[in-house]
Length: 261
Image 1 (cartoon, rainbow, N blue to C red):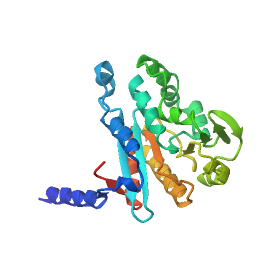
Image 2 (cartoon, one colour):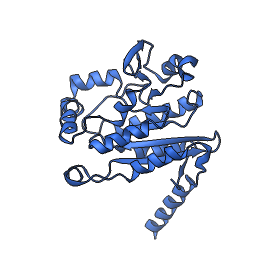
Image 3 (cartoon, helix red, strand yellow):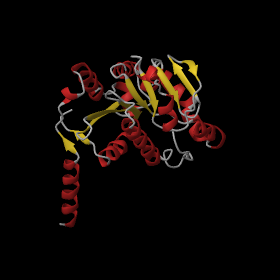
């Protein structure tokens, strides 16, 4: 009886964070079609046996208080050619992307102190990309090839992968200060980092402190929107393991899950 009551409370809680959304208020048909294609995509053959059937997990949340949609794309880091192409198509539907990316200090720490993580983020990932014929990389790298990209902690602003400036990029406040009206209104794609901010000590024993990174990402998403530098529906691109936690944190800050996606 007690277990059933707890399950009932969890169901009520999830319903409180869910709503049928009017997508015409922020998303166009082409965006929705491409997102649904990604959400339905499944691995086939040997890739499915080795890596599982899911390639992308898509979530859409909405906040009625500020009439704001957020689209979240959780991607498997290892995928095949067709899924990489589709991920790139999704990214090209959204002028503003908020993307996962390890800050420089944490990347340096991993290289110096956590060999297992350094290998999995380095040569092992590159090898698996080629074994699965994924020559285009992740949706994150596809996003960074087009438009302005701020790299967290590297003090770099890129345009189409070429350096154009060296602003401070260690915090979300730095990013907002460097995002001038000329850049924001240029009509070009903008890639903002989800992981600027406080240093988190990487560890190979806890999936690189998954929830702590989720908290940092959710904080930055809300900050960018509160500062009104995100003037269109943003696409949040992160590893699939981050998606459930990010969705929950955004719901805690006033967003509702769109159940009719």
